Image 1 (cartoon, rainbow, N blue to C red):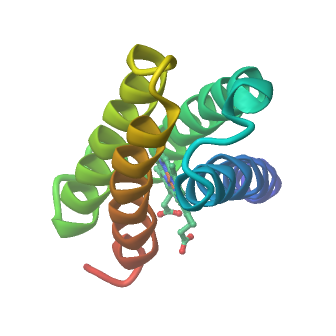
Image 2 (cartoon, rainbow, N blue to C red):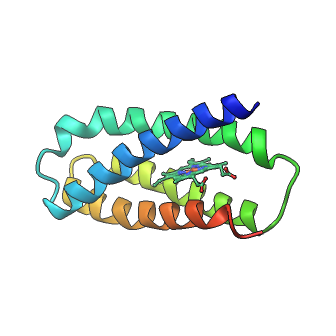
Image 3 (tube, rainbow, N blue to C red):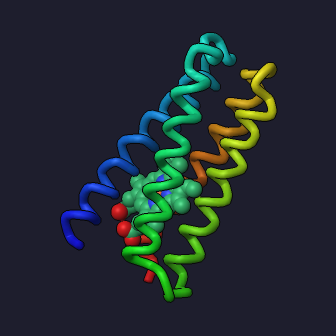
Length: 117
Ligand code: HEM
């Protein structure tokens, strides 16, 4: 259980660092180079989602405290960010500016959740 948790959390954080980091960078660059990163970003988002579900099942299933509310808010923001990156693929500057804001919210809520309750 402990090793499973460490592996899941490590993969979750590594994939989310790539996804959020590349999104922040592309927002700053006005979307230049976004097409080459579209598939890797969506792949990372998928890994983040799967490992996030795994972490939820291992650590949070059955709980409904402030931590879980923060994690849920962050997960919803992340899913909307992925949806916008997919839907606005032809308008990468706009897509990455919106997604960057949403992933910032996710990063803050995920980090805060552990100490929230
Ligand atoms: C659908 C998407 C996501 C889901 C379902 C999800 C779910 C989770 C869960 C359940 C945890 C475990 C918290 C704990 O150990 O108690 C976690 C941790 C974490 N998540 Fe996510 N997450 C998602 C997306 C993201 C994204 C996009 C980022 C970054 C931008 C992110 C960053 C983190 C970080 C840094 C932690 C570690 C927090 C800590 O242990 O202190 N997550 N996530």
